[in-house]
Length: 375
Image (tube, rainbow, N blue to C red; front, side, top):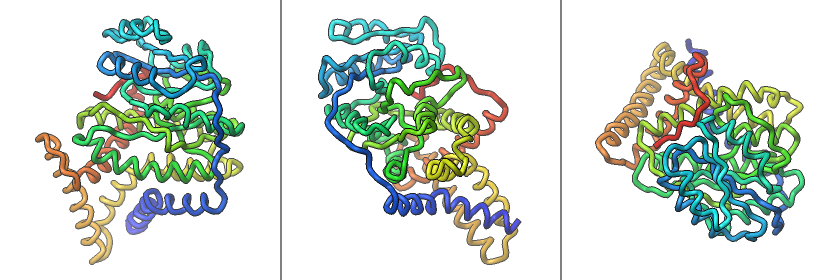
């Protein structure tokens, strides 16, 4: 039990502290930025939508105001069997060049993209959520990375706009941490996946997706990396998230991401081969180990009581304080209050609890490919 406790604790330390330090050092020694030049390839901006009437008008107005040559940009609303006013709203913008490509039924995002992307005209395909708002120059800044022939995918910076919910407080800190990792991994070779709010790929590198796929914005970039291209990070191309999400919605979102992580570890296991170099190291450290982190946390909690004193008391006390503060943050959230200093603990524990739930659901195969949007 002593070995299990210290081994699990050391692995957790590596996941959350050791690996970020390691990748930072490696990026300083061997990393390089992609070639960035002012280029204007033809671009297809795809807005996947399933019942997005609350956001679509603002999204289309924002997309039409982007600083990019209009004759080299097409805007597509890809509606996945929407049953609200999504399709009608998209059609009202047809005079301004917006195309609606609608599925007759909800087939799931993976199948939606598989059917839509081959119909696009752009050399570069940009994906952006309906609930995200792009800075005016974001598209131009994102696309400039494709001046580098080795770059196959580019991801922009994701930020939350609301300041009064869990994602703004906890995820704000989380995304600062993830942004640091993305910067280092991008310099070293490639980021591990993208964010659906705003990322781009070379259209020629898109491959059909399996209908059961959950996290398309992770698998698409990583397949491109698997073909020998780089997936890089462009922190100056900013996408703001407008939508606030409830605690239950956030848990459901994180659980679905966790199921996708399990899927991806199996689908991309070939990237763990030592011949993949830095990609193998980052994939193992950032994705594989992060997926089993909840199991390691449970192992530490259970096995720490078998340690010798005073280590057992100290470790149990620390865990008790940490988890109690996360639970206090949960109670505050349930009462409609956001306590800033409790939110990071809550978000961390919520994320790992959702990861555990996703892991169990994946093992039991209780997951569906159809679109699930956290509200």
